[in-house]
Length: 379
Image (cartoon, rainbow, N blue to C red; front, side):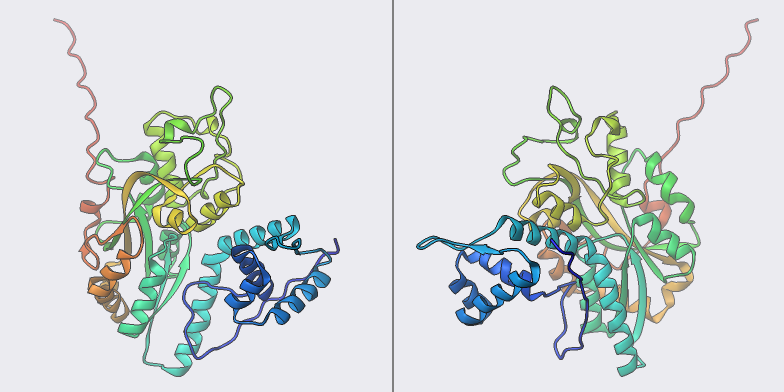
């Protein structure tokens, strides 16, 4: 098939967009036919006439050089194998790019907001990927006149951005591990200094394994991931430096499971919870780490492993910054609690409260065992 070009564009509208939603008439049409099973019902769902949808299908088939829909008399309309592959590939690519699209949209909104209202506070946050933070951004904008420029990155990269002065606030997540964690400590401890940084409570969420609906491979936990007896679940991982990858490394080390025994553990990773969920839903893997809300969004089953705290962090001096004060006010309000109710596996956890690093994080209150006392020489 001849290669087709892709052109992106954006527009300013009177109504605000939620999340990283993208519309493309071809994929909107294919999704409607796939969901409703007929061109007539797809046309009704899209608010268009049968004739319009029929003509659009023919134009898209000519543009793509491949048939897109097939049906027989008295049979429901079906996407062709090519259209099925095209729809899933686009959905997976869109999901993988969601954090970047959100960052771009936020940047464009910031520029427009500054042009319209020079008095609105702007706060740049680099943060580990999370489904609740876009809701926080919308809440802060609508209620507190605070524009949050949200940029998703791995937990370690977000903390590095804070250290380099590229943001005022960073977001990362870590489980409350009473026994400490060499993996988390090695990656994050050098970037967080007691007395210099302060934590702001944000939320608590459930991390675990996402699997196909019905859990056909009967995966019940990490012990079922290694290949054995001809059984090798295909694993899709998160990128090194992400909090979720650190969590998986920690949990496997804790259980003495070698990552090399897990098929796909070191294969090319995904960069967000939704991208992992999309990869599973498209059938390219059997299991992957993520949060419950991402599994729910893609119709996957979820096996909980651990609850973790999501923190925001800033320099101590930045706590008095007007934008940070507005951020804390948004986190402390009832609207934030209501926003979290709609996300499976989420709950408030000291939201908006200023916390001490040494009290909240697992690597400072972990007591290292004392070395054994040397034996006295015999008399």
